[in-house]
Length: 460
Ligand code: C2O
Ligand code: CU
Ligand code: CU
Image (cartoon, rainbow, N blue to C red; front, side, top):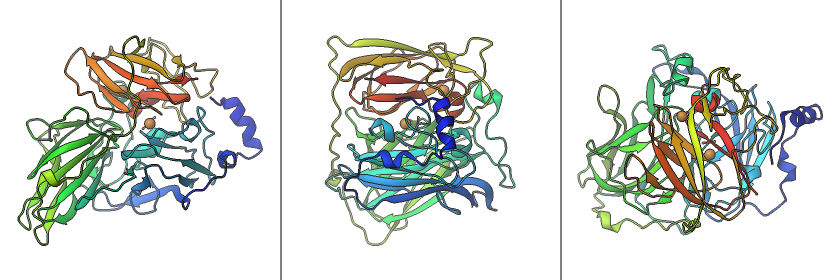
């Protein structure tokens, strides 16, 4: 249920101590904690000040939980701004989704909010604030979240790469996090590409071993074209879910497209020679750029790719497409003269973008009605039409869908929560609306989201 800004202001006077107390007491494993705080880290040669993380001097941690096991985490805000934490791709109860005003009050300075849920899906996800997103995410607050399989799988090694850019000058200082020019086009790109906040992230892995490589695109803007050089392997999952239809192993000829918010899991077999290197690159203007290197160390395990453990599919309801309800959503510019978007905690002061020709109107529920209302269990096809000349990674909270058609290309129909909509492309996605609540629906180029390309759907 949406919470109005007016309601929120009213509560503030009384001291809005998180809604943690509203969550029923239940048996949970130890409560983890995460303190969102100012940080510094030497992305270039000298420490960059003004970063945001969950540590003072390191990137946000990889958070792990186990499929089917209750999980709880206390998120404390040690910044002077509001925040709220979102678990991207996880199908959680609406009240745990971390969207300010839509599902909870923002967490004010020095407040703590307890998020508690039981992850149903194994796989690779991520977390990020959904309040002051342009500021907090661009300054570093994006982390990887892994849900381990209920029955553990054995790989010889795991490498997790949190891929993102920073906008720094040569002295390592932040420059404008975004520009109006960028926000009105493809977004404002970072100047320094990193994996785990490092320009070249190094990992020692067993010679001849099977590596589970998790790639997570947490950047606010960049659509990555990933390449893995020096090893054979296979893509085994996208966006948290094992593949239903194959995706080619990332190569220079066929790079793997990862748009903001997307994840890939790859199994690769390290060469049988000690010291051999496997490089993870992204195609960039001026040629591929190495982001991480895996080096074979120790005795040769001599594994074969065929020995790799198989992922089990997560339980996602298969939509019945005999007579689905079809709803169209149009993503484009904002008709001239709209007022600036005052939404989702922290306005950028512009309304460049819209869904169904209406930009996000504001934080209060009465300002922004649901884009569409569905009944729980409804089988739907959502037609996503991009009438702009820019690409948009469109993300839906709370539920999982799969693309079923495109007017431009053949798309693998894999379960996802974030679908890249190319310029002037129309794709159809299919799903069962099986999770009640108000679910944010927006572009994951954060400047687009913050300048209007955002809305929500309601499932009753
Ligand atoms: Cu990854 Cu609405 O977010
Ligand atoms: Cu999300
Ligand atoms: Cu966009």
